[in-house]
Image (cartoon, rainbow, N blue to C red; front, side, top):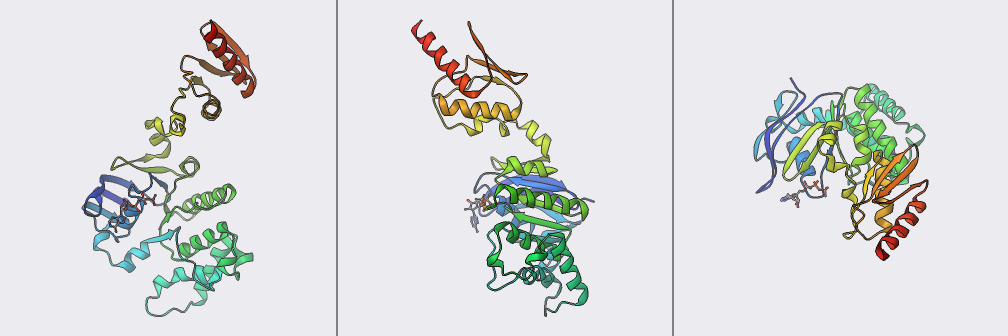
Length: 314
Ligand SMILES: Nc1ncnc2c1ncn2[C@@H]1O[C@H](COP(=O)(O)OP(=O)(O)OP(=O)(O)O)[C@@H](O)[C@H]1O
C-alpha cells in the first residue's frame, strides 16, 4: 500500500485547474512541487489536506480517502508549514514549537514531561537551542522558518507539506533548510512535499518532482522528469532579447548557460551560424572561414564583433 495515492483526481473550483492527476509518494521521499504562479499548487495542497473538495477522483493517505477523514485524523497524518504564516505576538521559539502538540490535546493544552523532552529534542535537532527563549520577531528569516518546521515536527505526523519554505531566504539559509528537510525525510522516514519557485536549487534535494503545466501534472523521479522535459534546463527559458539568436554552444550545462547569458547581454543579433565548443578550458569558435580559440568571455566578444564587422564589409 502506498502512503499517498492520487488517482484520476481533478482539482479546482468551479472549473478544473488541473485534471487527471495520478501519483504515488512513499514515506522517506522528498517531492518538489513546481509550476508557475496561479497554476494550482496551493489548491493541490489544500486538496490533499481535505480542505478543498475534489472535482473528480480520489486522494488517499495511508490507505484512507482524505474526503472521508475527520480533520484531527488528517492532522495526525499531515503537518503543514505555510510560508505566509502569521507570527503570533509575543511567542518564543519554544512556544511556537510546543504548538505542534496542540493537535493531540483538542480540549485543553498542558504539556507533560515527555512532551517537553521531545520539544527540547527537536529544538536541539534544528540547532535552535541558543534561540529557544527568543521572541519570534527577533529571529532571522532562516531561523524563523526552522521554528515553523519545528512546530510541524512536534506534531509527529509522518507527512509534512511545506508551501514555499525557501522564499525570503538568502542562498545560505535556502541550502540549510533544503538539506534539513532532506535529512529529516531520510532519518525520520517522513514524506516531505514542498513547493518552490527556486526549482533549479530545489531539484538537487528532491527524489521526485510534481510539475504542474498546461492543466496537467507531470510526476516522476526528479532527474527523469528533467531529462524527459529538456525545456526545463534549456537556456531559452532565460531568453529576454527577442533579436538575439544564440550560436550552437557545446559545453557542460553551466558553462553553456553562462555563455548564453553573456552573449545575450552583449549581442542583439542572429549568431545561429556560429559554433562554439568548449574543449580543454578553451572556447573554439567557428563560422565559415572564421575561427579562433579564446580563453575568456571578453575575448569571445571581441572576436565576434570583429568577425561581424569584417563579414559585413566583405
Ligand atoms: N477560493 C477560491 N475560489 C476560486 N478560485 C480560487 C480560489 N482560491 C484560488 N483560486 C484561483 O485558483 C488559481 C490557482 O491558485 P493557487 O493559489 O492554487 O495557485 P499557486 O500555483 O499556488 O500560485 P502561487 O505560485 O502564486 O502561489 C488562481 O487563479 C486563483 O485565483
